[in-house]
Image (tube, rainbow, N blue to C red):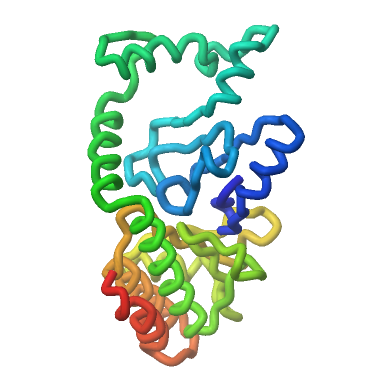
Length: 256
């Protein structure tokens, strides 16, 4: 898993791909919460299969499952001796359709969500127009800005080592005396929608904020503003405006 959605922990897939190549095993990357937001060089890093979905950094509504398979993965599939037990996950059914599409020919296996396919086409065009390097950098900057804002408000992160913190979302620990039951609705009343904790061992100790896809400076500042308002609503004492000021210091030099 490149980025764990429940805790905002990010793993470096590059050494894992190198291990897979060294020992002759396939490396499969769960990139649901990372692809198009975190740096990934699939071929260079020896990632044989990269899996993702439409609803995160690709900025498309939920409903599409996506994967890119490299040569080693395709060769392994072609050489397997037993049939795939899951009909819809069997590449035997999908590959002829994909090859026909690439050749500009019609093909059919099952009717996809055509509205989501059209949305994906628009999103991919936007991603290519921005450029992958620039997109990765934008995610890194707005992530840094948001986390700086939270730190200025006295809130820490779930990842204990910041080098393992995701750039596509943040998992922020509640300050002492604040609970999700009152805080999350207050944030929503301030104009932002954020999520509660998901990891069952600590789910009541933190909240999550996504800053991926088309997120920009305005989104980050609006969300921090809503969080500051919510903290005031629930009676938490802090330096008003400190979060916004810290985030702005990160964002101003790059003009995101």
